[in-house]
Image (cartoon, rainbow, N blue to C red; front, side, top):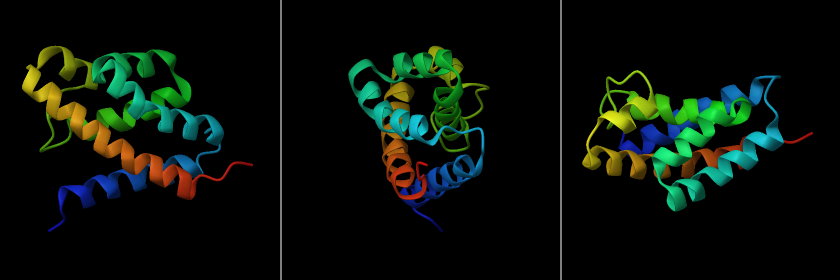
Length: 121
């Protein structure tokens, strides 16, 4: 049985490795946006940061989808929701706070793995 930290790490690594092999990924942008997202969540909150990343598209959208996929899965605050923003706007403040903490913890791993595995040309 894995700890939640191990599950986060595996999830982040799988996504980062998949995106690093995708020829459509702009590695420099992806890394930059991955490193900026935790600060944006801290300053503006998960809802504002998620809405911004979803609206921007491209590399932002990939990171939005990564967060959404994690927070919607079984055992997570927005389990059963179709989309991260749906969960944010329809669930209570307790779940929002849990989701925000989960997002920060996941993004710590994403940042580490983008630095380790995404090599810029």
